[in-house]
Length: 305
Image (cartoon, rainbow, N blue to C red; front, top):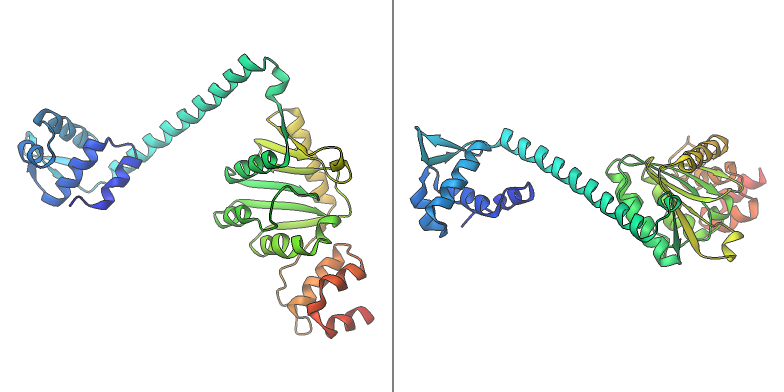
């Protein structure tokens, strides 16, 4: 039986025939062309070609000076070479895909301005595109967060996954986002606890998501959302630079928002710390009391004091 681990060599770009032949070599050890040909059904010529390729790639060594007899060798450097080659191939594929799409747009749309701004119509399409872009983030996502929302649920599994793999998140929330108790409990609070850096402002000029420095999605916020459910995808341009500047201005002007509920001295419980975080963010007393019934009488004592 060929070792299951060898199938990953195909992921690194090794041809299927070489993967299979290398798997047999791992089972047998030193082997000649004819022996592997009998085991695999490949012709002796195909096996010899595979031996030569595996040897040049550093996965097998020659026994003596005979190119028809090989033995597996420790593959560390060879795997590094395969990985670098695969990365270069994927980079070329990405460039080719982008160029193909640009060519499509030039032929179909024939409008250079459309290369910078894409209009996304209808909530499902907006939701799908945001999901795609957020999954592709490599370093940082910045957001101005305000209702209404396109998602069918409040939970943000993509952000939690991205935070887990090291993507930085900075978010500025409008007060309107924090008064929605379900959204606060199921989306905002779990993301902050997972490492999101959060601040808040009474109002935001737009709903905005910036992925790395490569693109941004601008959506309508209340009350403009009544006009239509659409969003704009902005690609690298002076407009994208302006939106990045807009976020940074909002970020510097916003108040810190801390809902982690970590202990803060002997007198404050986690629930009370969360309430104080909301209070610092500018939430009114009535909203806070409605959102914090579980805090009990100690919270009421705080307000009385």
